Image (cartoon, rainbow, N blue to C red; front, side, top):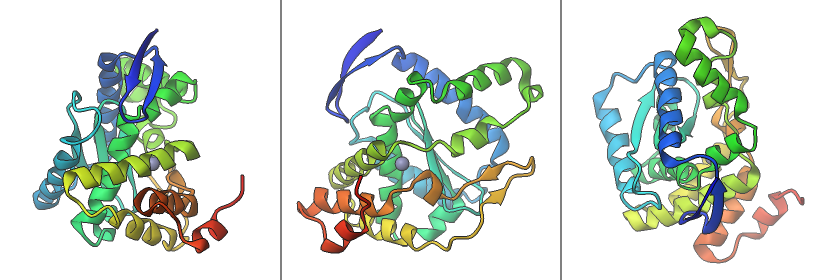
Length: 245
Ligand SMILES: [Zn+2]
């Protein structure tokens, strides 16, 4: 058990997971993800996402990590990150983002989940224990481990409401620092809220892959939090849309 001050969350945090261990876990899962989700062959798109990602990483709160940014094939508007610095963006999300600023907003949000160690906290709380066991198991047994694939589990990692709001507010901070327009976070969240409610798609092994809206719910609350972070006040309509808790 060690304790350190997390610059992103501004909290003193107690953890069983060293940065070295976190990177090792992330690398293991990222490897599995890349076995199951093919990288998009379009190098121009990869470079665009990598370029934006590197600008965000250069100003984020955990610059000691080596970040990697990859675009994977997939028809869902989705993005996710893994502990240790791995960010994945679906090609469909790249298409859905109108500008580099909107794309930067999504990438900054995913980087924020890493800097605030949201996934590590979940693992330590036992919520991700199965994922870790699977990572260890498949590392030893390869495909034979069977069951729900690690990649599918990783893409379905949903965070707690508080973590989502924190990631959005950090995204605003990182975007400002990197010279992107932070108001693009609002534009993309609004777009997310308007995505058609089509059924989730299925991977070949019968695994459900949710849309970004499922792994990133709470859109009305997130809009309100981002507007408060940006302007100090939210629109009245955002309060109306926010469920009372
Ligand atoms: Zn998120």
